[in-house]
Length: 73
Image 1 (tube, rainbow, N blue to C red):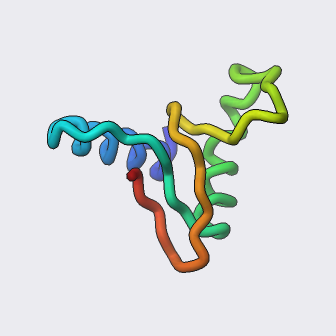
Image 2: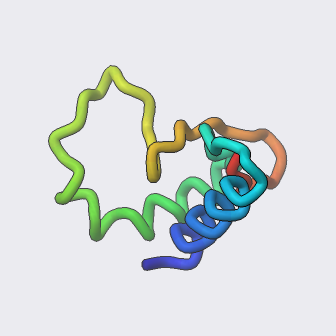
Image 3: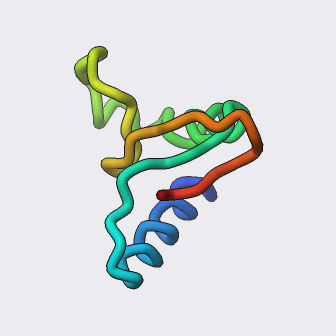
């Protein structure tokens, strides 16, 4: 796994420990590019996907932030 993928998992675990349900990943475009580089080796496991569906990582919908951000919410 990559650093950002591990970070997402750790944030999900922390939220669940606080009895919160993570639903989205807020990230800026630069972080998204790095995340996609980490995900590339696993894309063959997830295709085919429905292009009309929102992009998801670990079940989290990705929402872009105009400011530097990489946070599970």
